[in-house]
Image 1 (tube, helix red, strand yellow):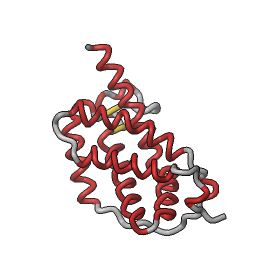
Image 2 (cartoon, rainbow, N blue to C red):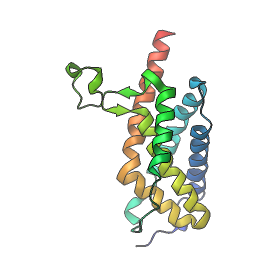
Image 3 (cartoon, helix red, strand yellow):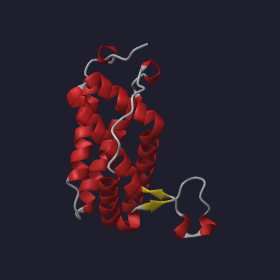
Length: 168
C-alpha cells in the first residue's frame, strides 16, 4: 500500500511539521540560558511524540535513501549542546550498572537532541519538495532510529524536572 497524506487524520501532518519546526527553532536558538530553551524542549517532545507515533507506519511506503548527514555539522551541534548541558547531559540507561561509575554512563541528552534535530531538519527540507514523502520519511526514521532518542530524551528531561522541583 502506498502512503498518502490524504490517509492521515486531517491536519495531522501539518501539526507534525509545525512541531518539527518549533523543535528545530529551539535547538537553533539555544543559548546558555539553559532553563528556557531546555524547558521548551521538554514541553515540546511529548507533543511531537504523540503526533508522530499516531501515524500508521504499517501503511507507509518509503524505501529511498535520504540525504547523507553532514557529520561535521552534526558533531558541532552535539558539542555545542553538550557544553550547554554540562553535568545534565549524561544519564544512566536501564542496562547500565551503577557500580561502574559515572564514566560508564551511556546516555547523552546532547546526542539525543542532536539526532532528533538532524532527522527533523531533513524531514523539513523534504517537506518543501514533497510533503507526502517527507511525512513518510519522518515516520520511518522515527520507527527506525530517532524514536528511541526521543523516548530517552523525554525520560531524562522528566528526571531533570523532578530533580529541579525536589531541590527548589
